[in-house]
Length: 164
View: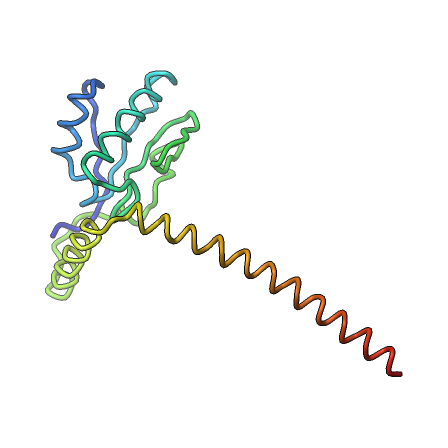
């Protein structure tokens, strides 16, 4: 497996058919990628992102796992993709220089490729929704137990004062 470094996805045309070809030919999900959309107007960018979201869902890819697909734009973007303002704001650990890995690193990269394949076979959207649901219930439980703890300490302090 190749060392995961950023790959820029160049868009020549923005039609849905061309986007499908670009997504299928690119290595989205196999390496971290980014789309530089700073030169586009807001309405063009929104249309492109909507088409891209549909195509990513059709190809059963996830915009965050195993490797993210970033949108670089000066205009704030609301989508399933993480967005940054400039290329310099992208995570630096994916910008390492390519060098020949030693044997131990090759073994780790092979293990990593197996993990990436396993992650791609999971139903990521379903798993993330389950995590969100369980986190909401756990947060609710935490808030209720925090309130109960407050009342118990208040009760114990008042009860101690009444004994004196």
